Length: 582
Image (tube, rainbow, N blue to C red):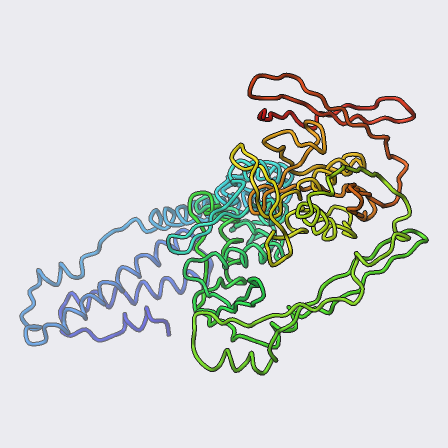
């Protein structure tokens, strides 16, 4: 039995005439409805109308029951007016209401279908657009540079120009108040713009269509910044940082040593800071890629470190040197000069005890020179087959002390060998002129006067060597004229020397060693220079003459003239000199 019939058949709370009439009407309607349905006489519209009427009756019954349940004690006092009110038929346009609802639902359904269709269509169009879009999507930046809508190649081009304009030639690094600079070109700093452009292009292209579309839409509202990466020549930058580390004002100081005369001075180290190279390199790379190095110095990352302990054995191995004998070969002609050796004057164990016995700011270890058995000057003239030049000056044999000085100076110079590029120093070779060295008092120029002085006369040997060096076409390094024109050479052909202040020097500018032979005998001082002739040698002439004279001074000039096959190739001024007159 249907719910409707069950409700109609429920016994009403009171047996009023209205209730009985209601029940009879209900049964009649039900019976008629059943008969009509069985006979098929009613149309569909009539059935719907009758059903609506039944629903109204059921609704009234339910309302009536609810009212009885809520007020049980006063059910017998319900007036006929109230009953009329509760069971009063309300005629509602059920058909029209149902049609409106159905129509509204249909419209809503159509709207929803349209919206979904539009969304799907927009999604498809948006997806296809993104799939065939060959440029970077909107909202993409590379280290602050907007590359939206650019192709990968255009983005890289713009980025390269952007970096060129932004980055400086040098970056600053600092530690406290200390600052230093590093050249970006020297460390081969480079920013990978190709990878950055490719990463920018990949945004919105690496997932499925839904993920890609979401990423593209997201970048429209929240820009994506692609970082750059920098690379450097790690070896070169490490070297730069090590050099800078050694300059830190509070840096670690390693033990060190140096030679002073015949002593080795060893200095202990001190604790301090050193640059953490690996960490600092990463900091520099990050500052370059982020462009922060443009305005802000890179902070050096340092760590504290103790100095290495003094290693005497290591120091000894570094300074120790065996002497080397000189020798030569003739095919081709080559001279291998001798070399002095060097060693501790005390044993290594004694040097260790010296260091560990007490704490000092510096330690002194005595040294000794180890001499070769064959020196370069001992090599015979056979190793120097060609005489390059010769020059002689005359002296008076009657002045014995002066002659002695000439011989001492000549003997010290005699046999001197100069390797290519080596410089001859007269004061260094002859040494200090002392009585202990055998020098005598003889005439010298002093304060515009001729007086006796120790080593008097040795300027004649330096002047003789000067002329021989010019004729050998060697480079004159330093030379000075006398106060007065000497008697053994003409004006501008002399070379005075004073130990400790005035020196005469020349350089072997040839490709082969030269040997200086010097002799004093029979009133003649002679200097000869030997070596190996070259194809580019010239014939050398010296032209010197007085250019003017006053009551107190003489003026002169000297020139070196080079000739090849008898023809003058060049004429070079050697000096312009001024002398006092006696």
